[in-house]
Length: 321
Ligand SMILES: [Zn+2]
Image 1 (cartoon, rainbow, N blue to C red):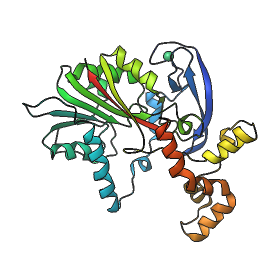
Image 2 (image 1 turned 180 degrees about the horizontal axis):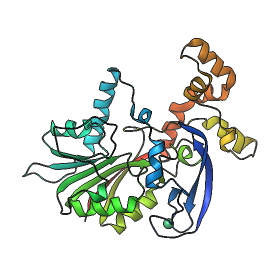
Image 3 (image 1 turned 135 degrees about the vertical axis):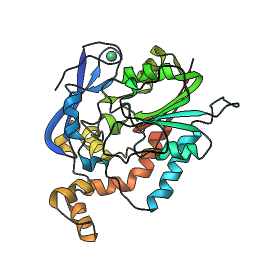
């Protein structure tokens, strides 16, 4: 484990926001999320070093649901992601994209089918080998490109995972062409889900951003923020146990610590070794009635959050100056 200064402003003064364990793989290992007293950046501190972090990315981490109904959902997501690139102003030549954290390469492939020349960055060894377009297997800061090369650089849910977001922003600034776009999705530390409901994927998520801290990163690295799209159109962060949190904090006037959080239905099944089905659903409803009511309230809660820009994730569109 290593203790680090703020990646955005260099300050070593911070306050603890909450503690929680690795909910997915190591439920007895707790980590602290802190907030920089000077600039407001959220980060895990202390945190696993680059050498130690591998342990928290076992093979299961990369195994998604392999159903075909997923494909239509993914196409919808990629279409939304592509829409963020509509503002690229390169009418003449073939437009060039670098997708950071491209996993199996489906999004760059989707853009290639729409006429883009594409490249990707993927450091995980657990994803399928990509052979149909150039791929860099080192961290973004270290790829052998150092000139303005791309009309757009995209990174979907990547910068919360890296050890040095500033290094990524600086590198993006070097490789995006003047007036090119830098589009990325990160957790919203201004949301109840990120800040209070223990929805972050700790310790794989190391950094937690707000519109203000993203703006500071962009200003320091030569981008201007054009748009923040707070919502669930690309990735989701559902407000798990919002009701339990509200009852404890607003009605009972108590705090809300990790030990107060009911298990999610998935955790409940895994820990008690139960199969999905009606009986299990009923057992879960008996275990945590508030969670079941909560789930019915999600559409209304999420709509309210999106209107107030307090949903758990945001996509940012920035332009190179
Ligand atoms: Zn700071």
